[in-house]
Image 1 (cartoon, rainbow, N blue to C red):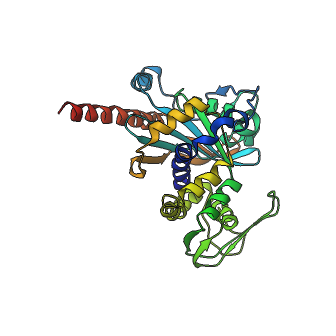
Image 2: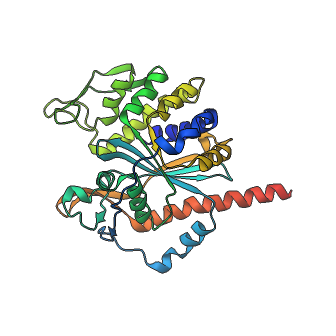
Image 3: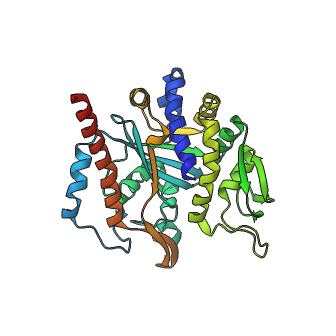
Length: 328
């Protein structure tokens, strides 16, 4: 689903530019209720801890950076089905994003059940404001300035507004979840088809087949994320074309965010000139494992630190190159 959220990010910023007149009521109805129960994260991830002295380089880069960071949350009921840290460099017109698997292991004080140690449980307990705190803790206190949340209904609206998304289905997809609210039924025969908004929800949520069906198996959430990239690349051509205004207008109706009016308008101005080839998306380094009584995704702190250094160093390099060009 990584590429969809890339599209959504660009669409959200584009909407600010194209439809800035509606922002008179931005601060009243676009925010979620702030949580009074903010999380306390316990350092217990099963990985070797990064020593404080090793953090100096990252901390120095963050301190002198002008990046604006926010968290994108795709919601499914009380849990976040998608979580992505997005870092926008307004000076160099670049976006870097890190997808965080929903099963990422993270311990919060007072939440000791196995399912509560998955990062997607933080939203239900602490709201979007609490998720900002959780993600910042996961990323060595790199600041998270804002949140943006969207539901699957918003995804469906976007797909319908652009006239559907063409996909190729290599093998029958068949899955039923009667306990989902509403119940989830997914069935697609192999072949080429154009998915509607409602069909896209099933396609995007599909992870495994019904037992004994012999249908396509995406091997869990990580495989689902990879498979959905092809779907979203197909959507890019439509979303970034003439139908962009309708797509972003539909998306905006399903968005909640704590970006204030003044910050939104500044973001809009800074985003002018942002191009798709200036957007890089990756996944937080780590691996899935069964441990501590549950199936989790364990991030690798040292590799995560290096990834963040790369993101902030790219900003430094781009600024130096721009300065050199201006001096010529």
